[in-house]
Image 1 (cartoon, one colour):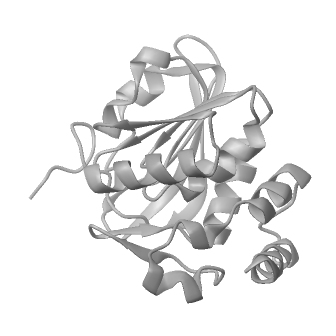
Image 2 (tube, helix red, strand yellow; image 1 turned 45 degrees about the vertical axis):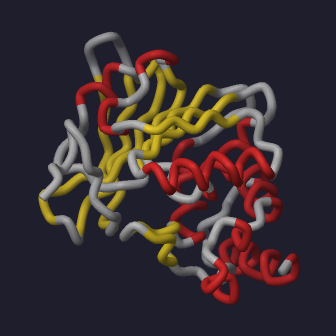
Image 3 (tube, rainbow, N blue to C red; image 1 turned 135 degrees about the horizontal axis):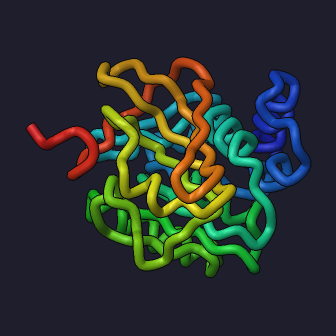
Length: 217
């Protein structure tokens, strides 16, 4: 599987998704096949989202690379991830921020939370804390964060996430009223009261469910 992983990474470099050395190293190191269900392992290094159960998916590798590049991560940063899923994205980010950094990741679905926590611990990611809860409310206990990113689409930008962003921090979130098409928005906190936002284009993510997201049906 290592050769397949390297080939995937090289394709992402060739297509311009991976542009920096830290992202290249992280995606070359993290075994995506460890995070997908047994029946999907043969497709682990294809550039496509895959089902992980509970109606959720593991993001396509190019999207994971895009998120990591857009966030402009540095070693030692404190990061909040909303939507742990199977834990793959968290592992990539954890590699980039290093042992001096820390990633807090929230998952609302208990079975996925347990699976992500178990797998990340098994692979030695001591700089990741997995939390079971409503990610749309963030995790104020450890705020402020240098970076916050959301792996599910919200109908609007949740106010708690804005509030938990540190000065100079960046928030990346898919936003839109259509559950099948959203805009990827990058928000930077430039003062206590002011934020700057940039629309990075169309994406399609599973819905963010919670108090500040889509409601249960």
